[in-house]
Image (cartoon, rainbow, N blue to C red; front, top):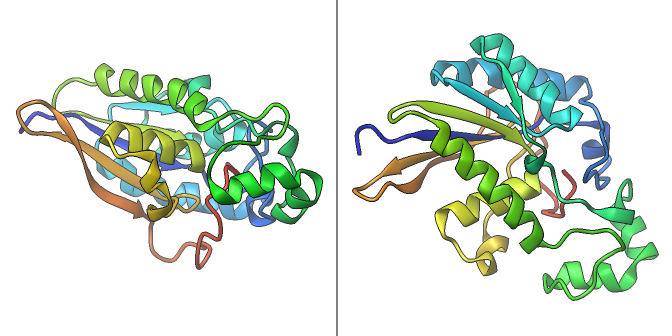
Length: 221
């Protein structure tokens, strides 16, 4: 499909809570200095892809990342609350150690990946999928054939949306490492039926601070 659409999914830059491995969820935490540097660095390569639309979660860390991309591309930011991270409820602000101490059943369930126990107010993966996938589908369908769009949002919900768009079963989620802060992946339509293919993953500009490894795929945001 030579005129297939391209959708680039970007994880926001680092926040202090990311650095401290605190669950963010819907908490409106801003980028730190490293996060702004990551966002500024990735903006140039993304501008080089020639995007025509730019979407973002409405949370500050995503919007601030998108602002750097908007400066580089001249695009306006289109905010969509459906692209928010998991709502982690009463887990917000907690480290993994604090999570385990405060909600041992939910922590054990999270470690098993069975979803049997959640903290009060926490969204399930199914609930996140039910809002994120329609948002990303709307972004994709808003593009003209042959054009590129960029969506800036959050690590855990990005993984949920990506796997769903590709038709990958969630049972395989542990085999896919989450994007680093300031990383991006590219989805391109191909084939006669417009199937999506993942053409690159966790792309990051060289010379910008990133963690040596992403310790956990918990919904920290």
